Every structure is written in structure tokens, then in C-alpha cells.
Amino acid sequence: MPSQPSSKAKVWRKVAIRLSGSALILATLFYFLPVRQLWSTLEHIPPALSIGLLFFYLGLHFLGVAKWRILINVAGADLTFLQAARCYYLGLFGNNFLPSLIGGDFVRASLAFTMSKSRTAIVLGSLIDRVQDVIGLLAVAGIGALMVPMALNEHSRRIFVGIALLLVVVGAMGVGSLFVIPVRRLPMKLRRIMVQLRRGIRSVSKSPGSVALCFCMGVVLQSFQIAINFPLAEASGLHLPLYAWLYAWPLAKLSSLLPVTQGGIGVREAALVALLVPLGAPSVLTLAVGLVFEAITIVGGLIAGFMAFVMSQMSGGKSKLVDPAAGTTQFAKKIPTTTHG
Image (cartoon, rainbow, N blue to C red; front, side, top):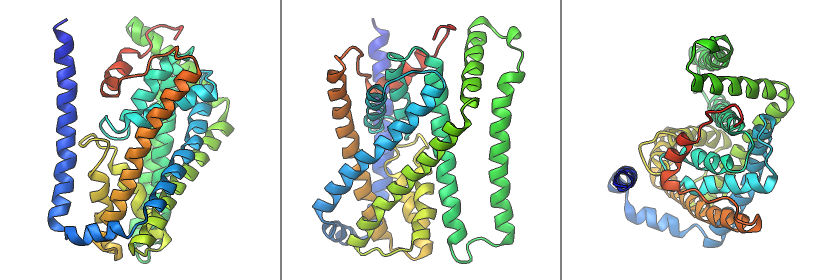
């Protein structure tokens, strides 16, 4: 069909644009920073340390698998741990090919649709999972900001608390609107989706302990990812207090949610440099640590894709692997339109 090549061409054109965005940001950083010093700093980081942290990074995400599985199963997905791990690690693989970190969520959900009895549970659980991650990152960044000496005066703290309360209120209103909107006035397709979402939310609301546990697991997961930067920073000669990383790293990761570069590459490093320079961190050392961590996530994503493939063979290969470049499109097409999911 003629539309298929055109659609694929658009997908790869967008990929090329995002790669160009990442390359442009990194090239700008390299232009303004001494490349020789950057390369010298990278050479001071032992390869064995980077490899060890890579496997620690991959193992750490088993906590992410458990967290995501609890949330989607509470909503009614009924996935085994092996199925959830396969979907989750394929999502990590997809992060390398799709815009921002959210792209991997679509790949993960698309594969889960082929395994679960309820697609709505996958959508709802994944949405809660992502929202919890964002809130967790903001919470960790807030703790770090409060620890920065003289960083927040009384007026700034009021603004910080006000923004946090606003996010809570908006979130509560968003969920509440799903129950206030008169379903009968909606078109049939939207009506069926709304009914499933309401059922899923009611199911999740019956397990507040599980949701709270998943939030704590998410905070622990993000905190350990921050901890990965410490040995890298020490090896490069970048010595920073704990609060600096707690404040800057979560905000830099949140910046990578913007769908302007490939997998957030470039945006995250630029944000980390900008956030740590006022705290006394040399730009070159900060960029070196950011690049090594980026390499760990990229290589980790590739290994995660191989792990997902191995898991598919272990499960008999009944479900097809999702093309990461087309993950968003497939996800959109598979959003439930029947009450049977």
C-alpha cells in the first residue's frame, strides 16, 4: 500500500530531526567547553567501574518491573513477572529510539496489550506509574533544594509548597472529572473507554497500600540511579555534596521528558551542567559524568532489548516484538474500544 512507505518515511524523518537536535545540543556543549579536558576526564573513569555500574543499572530496573506489574495488575492486567519484565525491558530498549523517556512507555504498553486481558488496565497502570515517577523525582529534587544552603528563602518555600499543592489539586480534579462527566452523552467509543477507566480507577482505589508501596519503590529506584553518579563523579574528580545531586539530577531527568531530542540525549546533559554550575561544579567534569551515565543508559537499553528477546523465546515467542520506531502509532491504534479489553 502506498500509505505505508509514506508513514514509515514520516517516522524516520522525525527520528532524524530528533537525532539532529541531540547532536546540535551536544555540539554546542563541546564547542564552549575544552574538548581535551573533557576527554582527559573521561579517561580517568575506569572502564571496569562503568561496566559494573551498567549491570547494576540493569539489575536495579527489576525493581521497576515489580512496581509497574503491581500497578497494572491492581488495575486488572493479570501479567506474570516474566511477561511484565519482557514488556518493561523492551520499553527500556525503545527509549533509545523514541522521543523523550515517555516513548518507551508506549512500546512497553503496546507489547503488554498482546498479553493482558484488559488493555485499559495497562493504560491506567502505566499512567499511574509515570505520574508517580514524576512526582517522586519532584519530591527528591525538593528535598535536595531544601538542603541547599540559602537556596530557598521563606517566600521561595511558599511558592514551592504552593506548586506542590496545585499539582495535587489538579491531579485530583482530573481523576474526579472521569466520574462527573455524564457518560451517556458521549459517543459510544468514548463511553466504553470511560466505563473501563472508571472500573480501573475503582479497582486501584481499593488497594491504596499497593499504590503507596509502588510510589516508595519508585523513589528508591530514582535514588539508586542518582547514587550511580557518585562513583563516576569521584573517579572524574568531581566532588559534590549529596544535596547537589538530589537537587540537580531529578530535574535534569525531568527535562529529558521533552520530546525534542532522541531519548532526551543532550537535553539531560545540558540541564545537568546548568543546574550544577551555580553549586560550584566545573562544567567539563559535570558533562563527563553526564556522558558516561548516558552511555550506561544507551548500552543498558540495547542489552535490555536483547533480554526482552530472550524472554520472548523462553515464553515460546507467542507475542511479536514491537517496532520501537512505530511504537507510538501502534499504541494509539490499540487503545481499547470495547468493554472486553
